[in-house]
Amino acid sequence: MPTIYLSPSIQPYNKYLTEGDEQYWMNRIADDMVPMLEQNGIKVVRNTPNTSLGQAIRESNAGNYDLHLALHSNAGPSNLAGKLRGPDVYYYPYSASGKRAAELIADELRKIYPDPDLVSTVATTRLAEITKTSAPAVLVEIAYHDNAEDEAWIRNNITVIAEALTRAVCAYLEMNCAL
Image 1 (cartoon, rainbow, N blue to C red):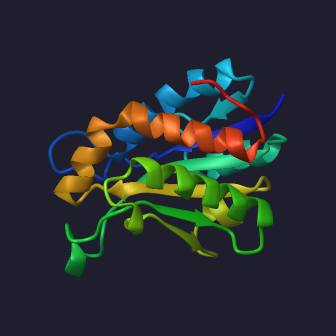
Image 2: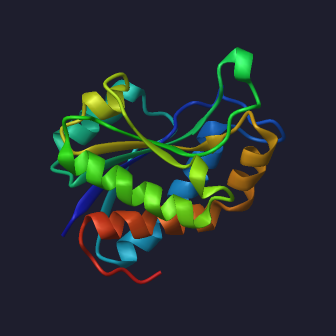
């Protein structure tokens, strides 16, 4: 049975413009994803809001996971606060599997995000959940929570986002999943 480690944000201090925070909304997406993945024969282990980043990485590395998937929302630097939009899908540049997973996730997000041209994949060696996990890893910045349009899109599309991410995980695992 394929198994993934699902790691929604543990950052309640990243407040959304209208209500909630990054931790709350990313856990809502994960909450929707888990039953979808499980009903398709994919075992899911996930962190909890009380897990530290180090604990999440250690938990992921202690298992034999096919994918480590981290869910986040983004914020621009202070000089661009509220001006940036779009999902960014990060992967480790030396992981062909991580890059493949990132591309599949980006493809699915392009189908649902209002401006598909703003969805990008980004190679990085700076994010611990990408560089320190044993499994192929992807960190998805779903959209910008400091941008009013993106923040509303996240809040109003929790299930749609969860379905897109689930389709991408299924494609990565080469499974035909029903949603």
